[in-house]
Image (cartoon, rainbow, N blue to C red; front, side, top):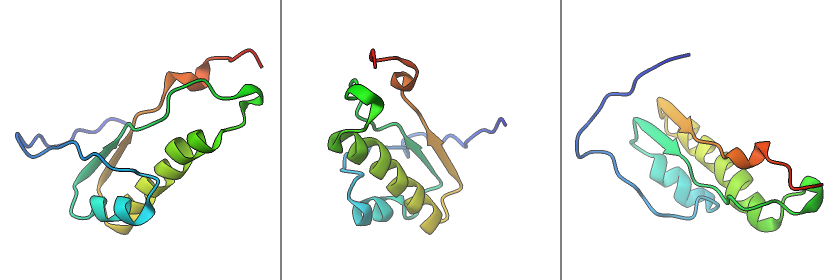
Length: 92
């Protein structure tokens, strides 16, 4: 499915935060037309493909919070950029 976002020069911004903090993430989504989520912990996962606490927080919890924030605030578009790490074997 293809779509385009309106371009608003000078109105898009990078907001540093800890997306694992649910309340902060929900508040950041308020009033947004679109959210581009590309935050992740891109390091090799531990053997056995079990997420470490750091991976779970940065990748799973953070993404769930971004989705929840977009839903709660009526954000029209969420663009999620994944990591190529999910296609790479770590030898397990």
